[in-house]
Picture 1 (cartoon, rainbow over the protein chains, first blue to last red):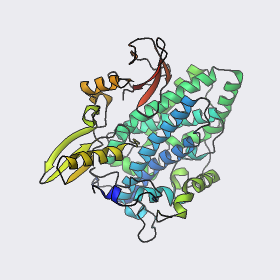
Picture 2: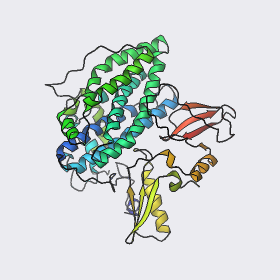
Picture 3: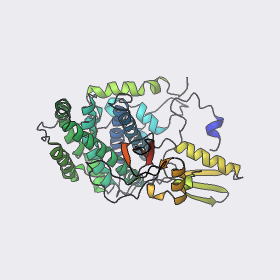
Picture 4: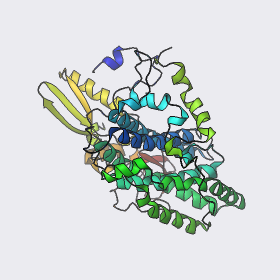
Length: 298
Length: 142
């Protein structure tokens, strides 16, 4: 490898200069009795949640109420992007068939191909991640709901028999703990702030609550991998998620929202590729440069 | 100078036949400095006469700020950064402000104020000293 990075002309590279395998040196051997495609789909779900959340958080660059929070949001986005990258690479290593086929000679690494060359129906993120942003209260509520559930998931995923998932979880749980605490504190501030901040917070909570149930729903892939000791059945931490949210609501003096879960299509939800139209618009923006230059050069 | 070894990022350097294999652990999964760190290692080892170098990423166990050496902590202070305290065991929900017993790396005053849990990079928080009024960065406990 040595000087390949500098010898080659990387200035025209559309996907950044660091296109080495992010899993180099990590044991990606498959655990026995796990179907490779199941593992790939499982990783895609967790990766897409992080990737789409990261994109939504990035949209707040330069728009937060204070510069410190601008920086905070960018950092949160970067943490999630890091998790997404490794999980996408893990999905590709488990089952190369999930990676979109690019033109001959394209140097785009598999994790970038997955991020930039899949269409909305191939994304497996929960719909909470993709709904269009509103005001700052909306950011806080979405991040709280997301990070409370993701933290419980990663906490349990540390014991995964898959080395990559276990390593991502061990690192990620600490990162997401910060995300959770940061959003929970802002939740409190907005709830106890002015009448206007409280009104906006409750309105955002009411809007986003129907998406919450999807975070703790168990699909067929989750179940298969949980049985194999590789994944986690989300229903096993639904109670823990509920308890943490309950604590935040109680401390903030906010009532638990009463709206029921958002319906899917024939029982299919975000994890099954069913999305709101907002995802297509988000992807159009996120993917436009990569799709215009699939060989990474112009 | 603050080295990768001082930061606890460089985990091991071993000879495998005639190849030098160095293992590094990212501080945060999204750490954008990984490629730079890897390239620096390769170049320094090349300069030291080792032609064949391989850098591996070791994700497990995850990096902890507890791995920063005493020398590294001194270097952080000398460069105007506040060193991390010990990583607490508790990871329960924290609804109050994060409490840390810090000293301003510039004037040594314990009268400091948290400005933001997130500084210029993911691994740092932003503080201000109420004594000398200078802002400074604190390397977070993780």
